[in-house]
Image (cartoon, rainbow, N blue to C red; front, side, top):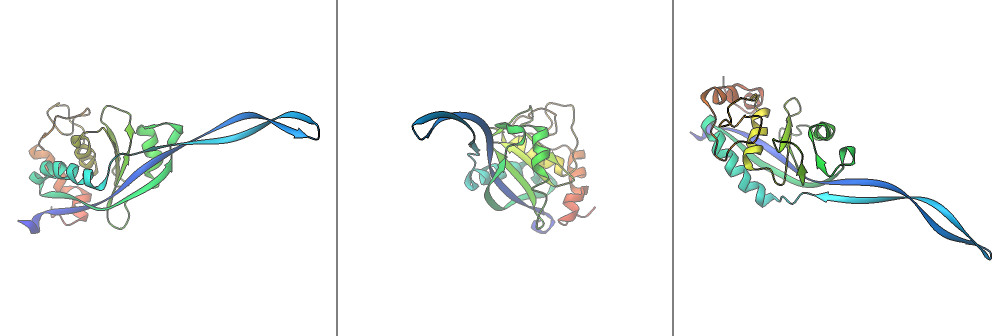
Length: 199
C-alpha cells in the first residue's frame, strides 16, 4: 500500500573537486636596461568533476529502490545541484577521511538526506556515510549496490559478514536483497521514523 511506504527525500550534490597547487616560477623582469630573474608564487587549479547527471541518478535510484522495496522504503531524488568543493588533502580520489572532511559541509538540510557524488572514491566499498549527519557519498564507478549499501548505513544497518549480503563490508553483488533482520532494522531506524515509519 502506497501510504505505508516511507519516502526519504534525497538532495544530490554533483561535486567538482578543486585541487589547488602552488608553484614557484621564475620570469625575467626588466628594470631599465637590466633584466633580472624574479621568483613568483603562482596557484594552479585543476578540477575533477563527477560525470553523473540527474538522469543517470534516476536510473541508480530505481535499482536502489528495488532493494529497499522489501522494507517499504523509497529514496526519492528531490534536488540535484552542481557544486564545487576544495578536494580534501588535495587528492583526486575521495577516501573515508576526506569524506568526513566534506560531509560536515553538506548535512541533512530541509528534511532531505544529502548524497555527495564525486568522480573517484578510493576504497573497497565505493562510498562512505555518516549516519549522524544523514550524508553519504559514492564515486562515478561505484555500482548501484554501493549506493544502496551507503543508504543502508543511513538507515542504521551495520556491516554483515556474508558476501551475499548488501551490508557486506566489500562490494555486494547486484540485486542483493535485504535480510529479514535488515528490513526490521531499517523500518525501526531513526531516519525511517523521521519520515513516517511506525515501529
